[in-house]
Image (tube, rainbow, N blue to C red):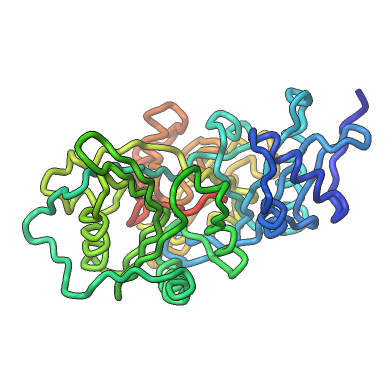
Length: 404
């Protein structure tokens, strides 16, 4: 086998990239997949690994913004389309692509942090990505009662066609996204990718359906099923968002009272209001899964992107084998407004941690105390851990409502 090389792909290599990606994820190329992948294909931000002339791996970056604690939306590198061709694994292809991405972002002064969804949870930690957010899929039986006092208001939830609903939905999303940690900016192209709805993507379910309320919206599918006692269909939510508690309650009530449905399945963040609305919270059976993995490209540029929950003056000793420019001691100072400054220092370290751990706590959902309990963060200065953990913690659980 020849030496592996890494470079940006070209427009002429689009079909090779699509074929490799679909095959690596055990998919056949369907009629409209070329159109779908074309929306995501940017040769300037996609690396390929080549064995001679053969493309054996791909990794791309989406140019998007993400909401971080207290600071609205900031640029980040959305890592996607990471795949290695069968028969070429365990040769270092992925390591070369991750190296090209992260070192390139650092050298060019690109986005200060990167994020991805992992197909396998054990892959990305060795490249400095930390698990920064999680989500639940809640399954709730039809008709589950709300607790007394939950207000659903007088406004109707209205079913609309896709064309009718999208102007309302996009406007509401743009209003909410800067306030919700982990949410991404969405252009028209981003919405197209997020709501791609060809028959092969439905897996036997309906086309996407759209319902709106003055204070929220829901996008969902239904899957027909009949049992011996009658209809047992499943209603699966793709996205639900609300600007008020009444809007959220009205949308959930609408779904829970849907005819012919036996249960609803809805993705929710850790602190979603759904379970607190139910008279019997146990009726919402929740299955937890990892979501966003975060990698700080440059510690100093990334940590000042967000706001913090409390003043802080601490020295972090960071290890980072994959991106060695981050190694060393950093003084993190946070003022009373939550604004941070980060500078190299010769002061003694208060806490020792890896770049992976900084990625995990960056969005405020994972606590430094939690990582310390797992032996991943060490407190050198007695009493330094808890104030730092409090400062990093966000007001709400981070959540990303789309896989990219």
